[in-house]
Length: 80
Image 1: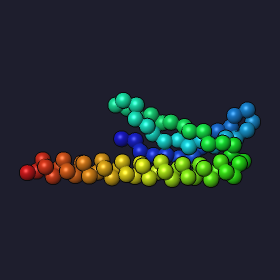
Image 2: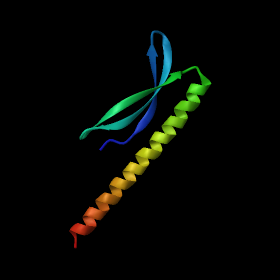
Image 3: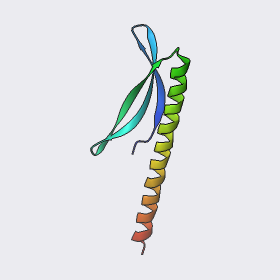
Image 4: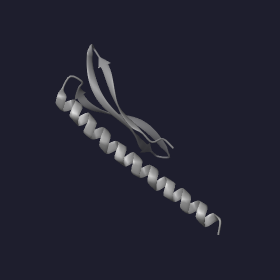
């Protein structure tokens, strides 16, 4: 299980650009995906990166909670 997200600065042709990465399902697998946000020097891009990171983190936390609850339910039903 891979849960996570983050912000990354990529240097391309001498300029820094912001990307937010997160995991997405790809069939039975999960793959890391990078979403372009904008130039790292742009204050609006930095704000959007934080907003996007917050949204992805909330989804990752919710997914983890659901997996934990499902695991507990499976353990509880196996003991009956």
